[in-house]
Length: 109
Ligand SMILES: [Zn+2]
Image (tube, rainbow, N blue to C red; front, side, top):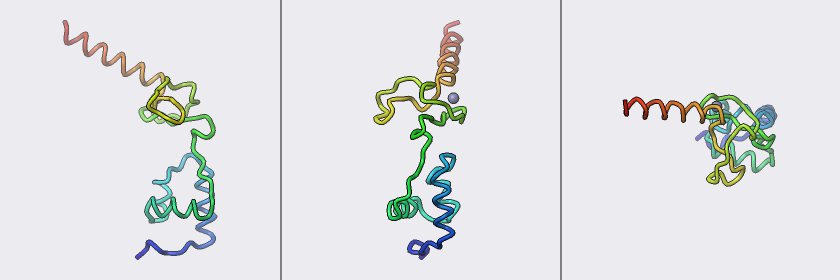
């Protein structure tokens, strides 16, 4: 099984490099190494590597337009326990509202 495959030093260095770049998700890293996400998380914990996320730097990637924007560009959302921000930026959420509005309006005409 690949599960218990040990880490080569250069792989660990690569892993650390990925962890320092918020562009890579744990999923991306797992795919790169051909390992499971659990394995990556366990390794990160074991070697005490810090996984940098955009949110640690005050940014978030919008899940609609995919742009990385400051947390100020997101509306308040009480369901996000950590940052209290939505996962869709203000611009995309207003676009969504407009579409919803016009669709509703169209239905009424
Ligand atoms: Zn957006």
